[in-house]
Image 1: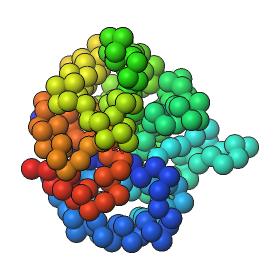
Image 2 (image 1 turned 90 degrees about the vertical axis):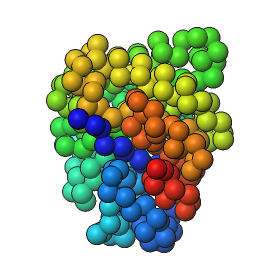
Image 3 (image 1 turned 30 degrees about the horizontal axis):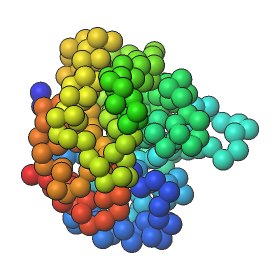
Image 4 (image 1 turned 45 degrees about the vertical axis):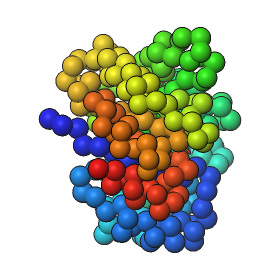
Amino acid sequence: MARKKIIAGNWKMNKTPSEAVALINELKPLVANDDVDVVFCVPAIDIIPAMEAAEGSNICIGAENMYFEESGAYTGEISPAMLTDVGVKYVVLGHSERREYFAETSETVNKKMLKAYEHGITPIMCCGETLEQREQGVTMDFIRQQVKVGFLGITADQAKTAVIAYEPIWAIGTGKVATTEQAQEVCAGIRACIAEIYDDATAEAIRIQYGGSVSAGSAPELFAQADIDGGLVGGAALKPDFGKIVNYK
Ligand code: PEP
């Protein structure tokens, strides 16, 4: 069965709640496309107004992060139940900015993956190499490690519904897009890694996105690749261009 493409925006730390509502109202008609899953991952404080603004449209609102405990003395964190209570279905986990600035590791990402599934939230788990790792030829070793640790204890049935975002760190927010060949090669490698951990059926079902300076110009060729099932989009997700990315065909 063909995998449905999933195109998600990662708003990062952008847009106040009122700006979020205005942006969703602007983008709503532009991102209409039932052939792909469209997800806007927004700052926690924007989730409720964004849900209200997106109501009746094909836009699904997701979160950018979540903690791995149920509740308690974790000042500043957001629990999975807080997300599901307002209808969140997707959460970005292990974005490279969180790994770099907030000391997230593959081990903490794994705890969040397990917790997300406990609450029925679909993770969009990010992985990707630095420029130095690419130049040293260890890209796939590094990513395989991120994927293997991230998916520890996740069952095949759960993994089938997961989304993995391959995001080379050197391509995030830099305007440098990986070549189509580089992106396809790593996404195919991630799928092979999932087949090794689980089986071919799981590898065939899981959706793998490319992320890193995706634009309306690069999206059609990237998303036409056999192992690229859509994109995780940062900067361009905040502009009308996101409509062109969603309607890339
Ligand atoms: C991202 O934040 O996940 C991302 C890919 O950003 P950008 O598209 O701006 O490179």
